[in-house]
Length: 538
Image 1 (cartoon, rainbow, N blue to C red):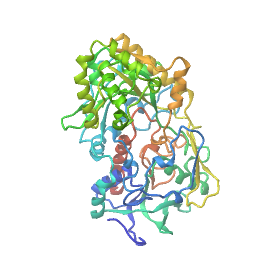
Image 2 (spheres, one colour; image 1 turned 30 degrees about the vertical axis):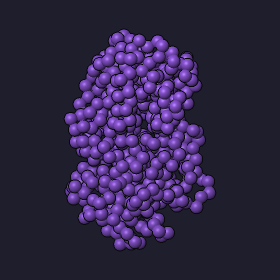
Image 3 (cartoon, one colour; image 1 turned 120 degrees about the horizontal axis):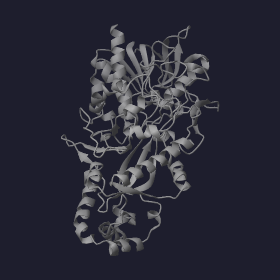
Image 4 (cartoon, one colour; image 1 turned 180 degrees about the horizontal axis):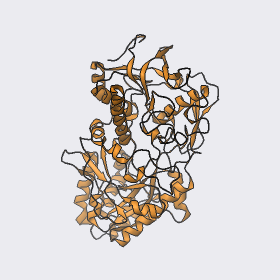
């Protein structure tokens, strides 16, 4: 049901979940299926966008690499309201302890998460099972990783009616948890303190799960640690440290000589009509040998306004639109350009017209593809010359200096202010550049193609650092570990030193891999649901 009014007579649920985003909703669904009662406490509103900033202290960012709080969303469905819907599995190597990646290694195996991928795909509206990933070429680079997209990424509207009718799930919206109250020994949570409609209410349950996103989970635990300094590893422990995201951008154009690989890396549809695409990666063995972080690459179509595509046909389509003024009206402005492309005039396009012997052969197909790419939703505009911007999506090293701390700045909010020191270090940047170099070597050696860099020498590294920007994925702030000295939660996502308090979401990932975190976070939430149900039965 959906609780209304003052909500002073809430039942004592088996599990209280803080946060109604994808992770919280997936966990609630799993627990409901197993017969447990659930209370979801959500800071945002049931319908529409929520302005709850007055309840949360301000966030101070020490650099420009981190997105502001406005890039997340409160309310039913959480940040799925802003999510693009990309679903990607982890790689086996992500769970291993890698000697060249300090603080790497998970206390669980990939198989422990993989068991829940099918259910996670279904929950996220990606179908019941992932598309089959097969290597097209093999060797030093692999194409076995598959990315899929949710057909309906905004989860709030999909679950509202079910939550209203549910007998086992109660949703309390516009309720901000601002304190965790521990019993006198500090080993068990007694209640959560919630602010709702100007009143402070205690919320009681048998078990509690924080699923409010990495930064907000960390803020709540750090606020609790102020009153219990030795808890959660103490002030020198892992809580709030090892903050990671992914660094992404373009520093090269890929030109294919092998159309088979180009096609394999383009958008395709599975038997259900759902879009998927393969990612290109340096193989696990080559990553190990060259001390690389995990990274994935995929194709982005060059804007037809960027003559770097080298196609007379695309230039022939662009010039009339540009000269007539229609291009500015019709373009959505989303196709990326090279730095040079942003400064070009018509001259470079005229050169494409003059130098391309396949102009007339390619023109009809390019016009059809351009229209199709606008109508199809998920489609990269095919390049007659096999040229694409190569986007990278790269793992970061988990380093303790990348962290968040409470800020003592004066605030009238219920929760204290945060200071975020999200770092992009030199090894993150170096790994991206060297991964491109290995990939370029493989492309040439295998006859697949080549890379053309958009910058020269040291400028490549500067470009990687300049484009580095995250704050959406919020990885590592409450990392999972076998030893309490190395992390915040155990292999079951339970706080090492609190018997009935758990954390769900990407904050528990020790490392981020190359995968976007939503699918693995939901899979881990479903695993947690099975564990909590088994614990209750025991």
